[in-house]
Amino acid sequence: MAKKTLVVVPAYNEERSIINTINALNQYRTATNNQFDIVVVDDGSIDRTRQKLEENNIIYIHHYINLGIGRGFKTGIEWGMKKGYTQFINYDADGQHKPEFIGELMAHATNEDEIIIASRFKNGSRLLSLRHFGSLLLEIAIKMKTGKTLKDPTSGMVLFRGENLLNDFVNELNARPEPALYSKFIRKYKLIEIPALMNDRNHGKSYFNRFNSIRFMLEQFIMIIFKY
Amino acid sequence: MYIFIFILLLITLALTVSLVKTNNVPFHSLLSHHIALFALFLLFIPDALSTIAKLLGIESEMNALFFVMIGYLFFTNVTQEIRIARIRRDLEKLVRVTAIKDKEAIDKQKGQDDNN
Image (cartoon, rainbow over all chains, first blue to last red):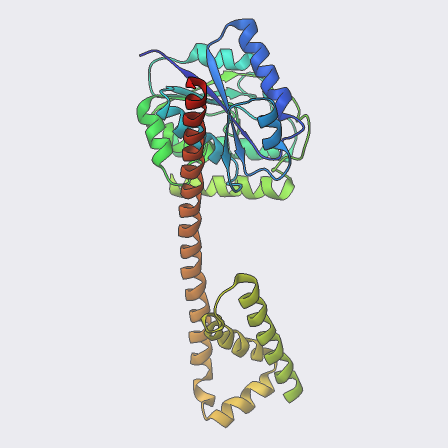
């Protein structure tokens, strides 16, 4: 079956960076002749994100309210599956991800049900920061629970493919592309990491302030150990 | 002492009214919750509590009564949490389904416009 790729770009209040992000993706696609389509999921933005998308004729899906990180990817997958896409890449709207790694992700995709993660720590080392420490903690939790190593469980740039995996993901309540879900899927499906580099955030404010980072890490840690 | 009781009663009532107004719920739905809360507030003034208990003739049952009240508050808390989680899931599903349906309607409309 031919691989048809959809890059899903969930966006919440990204009026300052969304157009640059989409332009970078389009330029990369033209330059490399990689075959993929792009859809933005506006996750209930209260700034001018939606107007910007309209003005620039960008294909988008609109959530009436903000559903939070990850749900946009799920909506994109659900819509894409109806349109016949077979593999999906989650791509941040804030300019942190580099388009060239889309090609890398696509090149590593086989015909199996699989998750491919663009990993910052596959070949690189962690920094001395609270977020990176949390990521290490989750790596240890996944290792303890599944016996498998996942160096960058919090990476947002990820490829999902395969009918079973996609159906599992869409039908699983509260499923988001996050460490706890990987911990569950890693036992059932193929999950690989490829080395990647990421930029700093261009504009706007990250959802993950100090408080949210700690809460997210703790929540994920508990879910990995006790739920999945 | 009675002034303190009166102030506590006012605080409880104010809490009830504010929650009723903000959440647009009927007054009686929160009343039992706030009676229990008021009774727990009274724990801050043991003298007042023992006077009321004596008046009501339930001095020896007070401990049991308070355990039941705390239990009741925990129970309502858990049931509300479960209800909220379910409503959030339903809402999430509704928003996502609506978003996809809207998108399909726009695509269909565009297709028709292109044909015309």
